[in-house]
Image 1 (cartoon, rainbow over the protein chains, first blue to last red):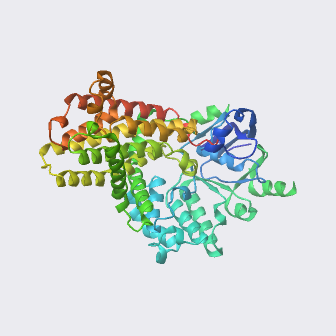
Image 2 (image 1 turned 90 degrees about the vertical axis):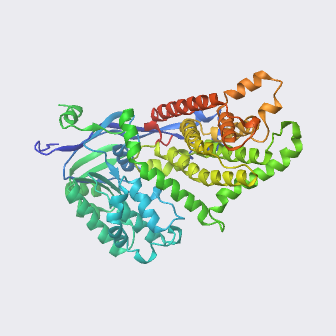
Image 3 (image 1 turned 180 degrees about the vertical axis):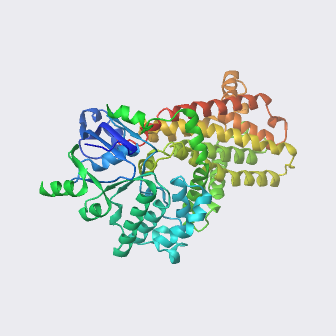
Length: 248
Length: 285
């Protein structure tokens, strides 16, 4: 790849391999399982080679689409970039800690939306002060002004998804990874969230977008990585890679 | 030129490495608001759907004390029962409750938050610490109830009660250290969650929660010697000694030293032990 040398690299993946060990039953071992199967356990595990040597360099202000069929290793690559999945071989280097767009796991559904905005913000690393500053913006963006006092368990799934997206995008990200998040909510909200992603990219620098929607990739990305069964098939300008992917 | 050299030239850092201890601890400190809010909101969520709400935080151990008091008070007979038995029992059960909830639920603080650990990056130590904070916040109203009961049974409040503050601090530090250790161990051996309640119960029956170790084993100096160095027994003896009057309840000054060493030592070991596996916690295998 002929990379322009004047642009600053922000993420470098150097021959990244990821291997998972899983139980052959496909189930994750629960406490009860492992107590029962403690003796057989080692024999029943299988190694899955999820990434087989992926290398690329991402530069400042790149927005990179990541495409590939289900189970091709896209999400594994993203999790490796964030540092959540350790590489079994090779390394990933980054200018600042990349973050995944998502905050759902930090929220508590028995608490009101208001409490969850605070909790989610703190989990993302904002300070209380920053959260109070952004509070109105978040609630406005999620369109939940009327329901913010209610417990989150009473929200519809669309409302929950909007709240999560609004909280997650409240933080400034230097390197941001968006994994299929654009599919949330109704048409109006989807447009608004795409605009928000573009705004983040313009402010921040580098965005990775994992999606099956070629339209949203074409709309937002200048470069695409195509991953198939753990191998990097192609890395280049959006239209070229999408054309090759759709021809395959 | 290799990619690794490129990365070094551009000043990029390796992702997923464990930060040095100093960095790590200042990261944890930066997340203190998260730790505290997580603790507070979890209590709120836990109680939100009960009619009595926060009342249960106080009611549960009271009922507990009532049950143990009736059963063991009758079973054991008077030779293991010191003066002020009701207060003795309440202090014991309440303090033990703080320890055992940290010990058993704290061990799951990483494993039961797998989704959170896998989706957001923050120092994982925040989770066990939030759990201990949560239990501490639930322990404080229990201490108040303890004082009310002790006063109601005729002990006059005295300045020495202020020493409860350093005692609670030491006890919390000890519990935090222990929670860090069990939280990591549970990540390696899930089966431990099955075992911990028994260990906790073992301590319950041996620490002198509902009987007096000193009275029961007065003819066994070895047992008493061991009890002198058993941290939970030390914390409880100090608590009872500070609150209650009478010769039996004289505070053993050396217990402050022993329990202090236990608390600080456990915390140091816990922090190092937990930090050493930091990059391991998000993994799914």
